Amino acid sequence: MSIFHNAYEALKDCCFIWWDEMKQTVKDEGVLIFFILVPLLYPLLYSWIYNNEVVREVPVVVVDDSHSQLSRQFVRQCDASPDVKILCYASDIDEARSLLSRQVARGIYYIPSDFETNVNRMQQSVVSVYSDMSLMLCYKAVFQTAQTVSMQMGAEIQTKLGGHFTAREEQIAARPLQFEEVPIFNPTGGYGSFIIPAVLILIIQQTLVLGIGLSAGTARERNRYRNLIPISRHYNGMFRIVGGKAMAYFMIYAVMTAYLVLVVPRLFSFTAIGRWQDLVVFLLPYLLDCIFFGMVVSCMVRYRENVILLIVFASIPLLFLSGVSWPQSSIPGFWQGLSWLFPSTFGVRGFVRINEMGARLDDVLLEYQVLWLQALIYFILACLVYRYQIFLARKDARERLADMKANTQ
Image (cartoon, rainbow, N blue to C red):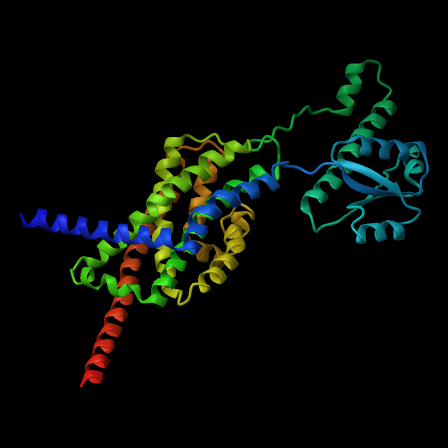
């Protein structure tokens, strides 16, 4: 009977903590913003911005010192491409740089005076490409268009000078090795399908930590930890407190996570080929990991505003450390070790492989096991953190009681 009684008491305490945390969450407008409003609206805004996937009609200015038929053909073919739009001709390179510095144009094509002469002499000719490097997508469009057009023109010139008798011989001479470029896992080659999945997983961690930290800052300001002192007297009281709070956060973010990983990618037609069963099993430890991680981070929050400065600042570095925006193999060892402290690192890697590449759970077994290990470690740390907070609340209560007795005497 004692076992069932203890189980009943533990469940009762967990439900009490869960209910109290849910009430505090609903009453706190700041926590509701981070738990509900931000996960609902921020992914839509971010996805809508990148919904075009690739940039088109990038304005380019041309400096044509050749004034030849071949140079005009090069410019026409560049202008006919979907990625580049020839804005105007500049009289010299200084005028073109002026347009580039004022961001009227995003790139410059400089055709030298000996462009056609060198081709007629059977010598290699050069077209110089200048681009605004502040936007990598614009640089990609400007450079790849010039490269593609130059290769096509080179193949045409080679075919004309080859002296072939049949069209098949001309095809073989122009393109001896036939190949077809097929982008895998990102059919459109777009930036949105590339970066949005990682951002969605990072949003789960960041908003959870922000909401938990904000709630903890409020509790510390109002000294709400005194309400947990009766429960903390049990030898397993910390497990009940942490478990009850985790239940409240998990109930909210089970819905938010389903919305982020299932609804948003399909709403904007991003690549989503993973099985939902694998996603559910993989995201379970990730969600628990983020919850316990947020509880541990909340011990650093003395005031409500502190967590916003701490977490928002870390968002961009965490995206880089995940190995999606920047290659994992190129990240220095120190920063790779630092990235292992955050749930988002392994969560992003595993989710991208499942959702974007069609991997199964066995293919991301390492990330899956690390997330469970992190969840266990952060759960123990969260229990220790809350034990320390309640110890401070108990100490404060004793001091207040001593002061009251001294004043009455």
